[in-house]
Structure formats: structure tokens, C-alpha cells
Length: 159
Length: 289
Image (cartoon, rainbow over all chains, first blue to last red; front, side, top):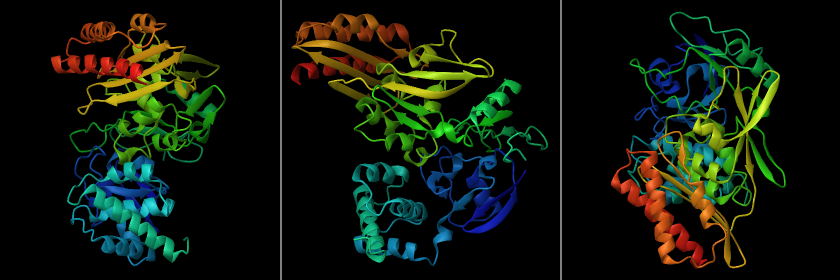
């Protein structure tokens, strides 16, 4: 099956089985360097992407679902001000995720603060659990997201 | 390609690739299900974690996907009910807020699927999936929820308990669950406690009046499709004066333990101990409130 969709702002098409996982296609067909897959059950969060504007584990998205949609990986943020906000927020907290989870944690932070620069604590605490890698503490990650949100607010003058 | 706007053209590919249909309206959905009665319904797709040897998702041969039917995303509230469409995601449901959603259900929402899947998994899908640990079923049954089942030319409402118990009430070919209706009755005490290992989930509700218990519901979800719900015990506890005597609490907890043991002989002694402790903890908490 030929699947056409938008990946990081560019139109792509790929031949894939309808039941193939989006994460597999991104890794092996489209060679997205940041993409990783661990549990294949949507638990670990290492394969997070922004799919149709929402953050989701791409290992649970079959390719037939991807047709005509928009997918964003961390590569889609490279060089953007949005990414700079997050990096500054992380740096100001001293938050340094490992190489394995840096991409999904950054993308998750982007999804959270893009939706709401003042995320509700209750929701933040649930959403931040989407990446299971414990190279950093959970509280530290929450603090990093809050600081990234502050950076985004100050840039967009949403003070 | 199957995913065209018309939603009629099936997948034409080699081997056993699934045929996927994407209806855009409820009427189109029902027509498709009538024409393809053996097809599986795809809502969030998070129950497809079973892998085939090749690493592909285990998609059935014919799939009718709900994600194009916008009507089914609707969440509506009336004075008496909360109605949730079959395509409403768990995140969308949780955003309705803890002031509207009954506490026992609200507390259970984060436990249904991992956080990375809350944006696609649906609450109705969780009710419909058989044979897995279904975390939302116990609170929904305790709350007295019902589901709407539709087919071409008709619809019916049945309780979630009856649907899960399989008393001839599972979906017939050509049918689909379209809505979940949750009564918004006031409860004075609502709790939800999942076990760490996901083997059991405990939901309990109580209403008090004039120093007594006006109504009680205690439901335990298990790995089996059915839940443990001893209606006789609920009825016996109803109308009792508070505080409940310690002897009665112990007797009620033991009865629930025996019910659980009869329901699923595969329970470990630790599971039974946990059930007994949860019931006695809940009943004691009524006294303390």
C-alpha cells in the first residue's frame, strides 16, 4: 500500500503494509534518526511522535491510519524557536536526559507547552509519565517542563 | 485505497492485507457493518498490541474504522447523565473535569492505558475489549452505566454489566456500540483502587442519609470479562445504621472474598486477601466520614 502523508512539514510517500507500525516505517523506511522503539506496546514512550497535533506512541499506529495525516518528529523542530525555548528551559533546570530519551522528552514537552503554556499541574503529572526512561528523576522532568513553558511564555509575551 | 473520503473502496493489496473502511457518518458506518458483518471495529486501536511474527500489528482481515465519524467523538452532559461517544478518547473524557465525571471513574482514567496512548485510546473501546484487564469496567458498572448498541434500522440500550457478563448480549453481526451513558447520581463516598499488578481493580460507592447507609455498590474488576458484584451484599448493607459494627464489616469482607473465590478459582490467596482488605477498608471509611 502506498501511503502519502506529511512528515515534518514535507510531503512523503512510502510503500508499506497497512498493518505495519508507524514507528517501524519511520525508522527503517524513512530513516528518522531520532526514532526508537522499545516495548512495542505503547508503554515506554520512546517512539513518541506528534500525530495530527497530538502526542502519541507511534508503535500503536498502523500505516493505514497514517494516510493523509501529519506527523512531526523531533527533526521537525530542529532550528526552530520552539525547540530553543525547550532547550533553554531544560538548561536552566540542569535537566539532561540521556541520548535514548532526549528526543521523546523534548517532543513531549513541546506538545504539552504548545497546547497550553500554563499546563494544569494535574494534567502535567499524567502526561509527563508518557516517557518511562528514568535517567532523570520525574520531579526534575516536571520542573524542566515548567521552565520550558516559562521560556515559551516570555517569548510569546504570554506573561 | 481504503481511506478515501467516500470510505467505500476497500483495500486492494496483495496477500492477506486487511481491508479497511473509513465511514464518515453513523449511517454509513451502519451500512458498512451490515455489508461486512464479520468485520472488526477499530476505534483507538490500542488493543492491537499483539504482534505477529513479522512485527506487524495484528489487524483483523476486515476493519471498519471509527475515526472518521465525528459524531462519535461527542461528549454531552445533561442533568442526569454524561454521554460519551464511542470515538471519544480517554484524554478528551478526562478533560471534562473532575467536577463532572464521577470520582471513581475519574480516578480510574489514568490507569486504563499508558499516558502515551491516552490521546488515541477510547473509553468505549475499553468497555468493548474482551479478555484483557479492563480497568474502567468496575467503576462503570458500579455507577450503573449503559451502552447504546446500534444497527441498521434500530438501536438498544443495555447495562455495561449485562454487556460484559455475556448473557446473550454481546454484539451481534452488524452492530456497533455508539454511546456510553453514565448516570450522574450524587454519591457521598466514591473510591477506585487498582492493584499494582493490574490483576484486580476495586470500585465502591456509598450514599448516606440520616446516620445510615442509603445505598452501597462494591464492584471488583478482574482479568476475566465479568466483574465480581455481589448484589445481595449491597442490598444487605443498604439501610444499615452507621457506624457499622466491626463484626459486620468483617463478615461483609469475608463474603466478598468467598464470592471472588467462587467467581475465579485462579485467584491467589494474596488477591483474595487484598479483596477482603479493600472491602473492610471501604466500609470502615464510611464510619469515619
